[in-house]
Length: 385
Image (cartoon, rainbow, N blue to C red):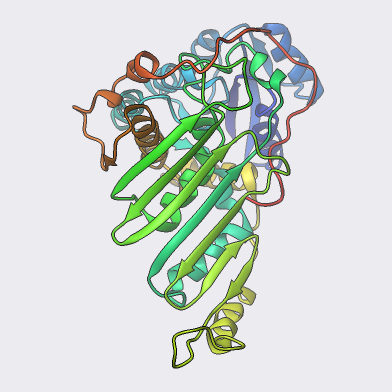
């Protein structure tokens, strides 16, 4: 029976707690910690965690609680410090996205993981979704042919009060806007589906949130050899429609799911009806997909529990989290410096280091409010990615 600790008991921690509670024969939550011990106690009571202890901070949990694995669901600026402390204490770690605000911190986390021999997994729960697994299976099959163009819309909407919470809305505490904190999931998916791009060019802006330093919209172009992808990261899109549309040599596939395939007339224009043989072959592959046993956070937690017990690496490792932060960093560097940024980013790149983004990033607006807590539930996401 694995003993679990939860560090950071904000709303996203509920997804972790529900995930662990799905496997009562494999794990037990025995400790919770937050900046407020009262919040930890309230969360303990709300989920009926009778055998858990509420600690007044993470340091006391790590030093006093007997835990095998911790979920770190605190603000992004604390991820590196807390993860490194847990790993050095011999505790396995699953840390919420983004892994950390800088590549320097990501690499320090990876070093601590290697030296400790413990497991480090970064949350990327959208990989544990049937609709996105289907997209990857079709892409990996080769049926669509070589990639031409990809459109990725990480489109969210947040009202002005969203950035009143104390740790949101500044480069120092949040690390960025939707590019880092919302589109990180789509950025991870782009790396999972397509691999690392060769180069990035982007623009960032703040168009609707006058109470936040950070961007509320970015648009990036990613180059993969000859192919291009466009990525929109936003908290200004009404309807919150997230899409991934992949145009290949022989067919287009998309999430939410759609498939189409054109064929040419002698003059090069599309022929009526398209290539139904390709469509049929793709739909046959889709129909053969075996649904995942567990999805979302629960799916990733199930994988991490298996990995801890078996000693194998988790499906999503620390390096995957670093790769996503690298692409985010390139988008910010390009948008701030108005330049094309080649990948991979090297350790001598000024944006590699902690503090460089905070120093160089534009302050679109002054953060006007800073409240410790907010009323209302969070919406994890729409039915699409």
